[in-house]
Length: 364
Ligand SMILES: Cc1ncc(COP(=O)(O)O)c(C=O)c1O
Image (cartoon, rainbow, N blue to C red):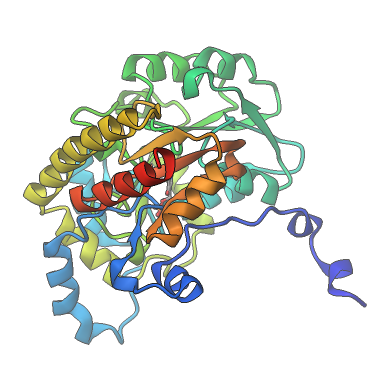
């Protein structure tokens, strides 16, 4: 019997996530020196990992033979103090990606509906489909989440709503007061997930903790993959009510977050200077990059994160031109944006390289 007859139907119809190409792959395929390639495709931090995290992992590595602390005791306590919640209100994941999947396991079944923006992080859709639920994608005028339209789309079958603010891949954000009002308007059978993957790039990101204290079905997620520079360790977290976290913990695998990730995250949380510097540099570099793109006749969408969404006459041609010259960026067909590229804001040097390639390409 063919395997196709045996598999869960959702697996066969499941779209496949296409990550940004690793530097080594592009170097191999194009015969380039990996050292000269800039990867600006996955919104990783161009400033590397928190040095305190790297030192802590080096000091820990001799203990790698031990299983991790599945309950992430130390890290939860530290995060609880920082976020002002109880340790029982926190769940750690193998990247915040895993928290999205845990939400699917916990709340979604066949026929349920999940609401998110038409240009939202693609994993919301993948997880929705994986659990046999129906994606309800809401158009985003000016690439912003339309909270009124999202509220209007709620039905009896709606179980989850995902909003990232700032949003990937558009870089746009919603205000705290709008998000609060939106969440308070939702009926009790809906769980609202605010994805704060890029929150640290803002000085004052929205704070939805009052909603959690009010007993609303709200979960917020953060990641160590972006400003903390720990994407390779795979670690992120969610905070919500004790009841919601207890449900998610039921289906979490015992050792989902490895010790290196926990050690790195703990140390990175003490690296305030580094995080502040990354935030400041990202702002400064993002401004220079956006100005440079505008000088080339392009019109980047104003961004509150560490990337820019840019429309091209021929986005795939621009993508290939950048790639053969050693800059990897992200095409956005999977986001219904075939004419756009997402450019991670790099170091000054990387951004200049990108601008020079684009200048030769657009203004030959
Ligand atoms: C909006 C958003 N949420 C979540 C994630 C997942 O992050 P991670 O699984 O690395 O924590 C990303 C990664 O790009 C993202 O852009």
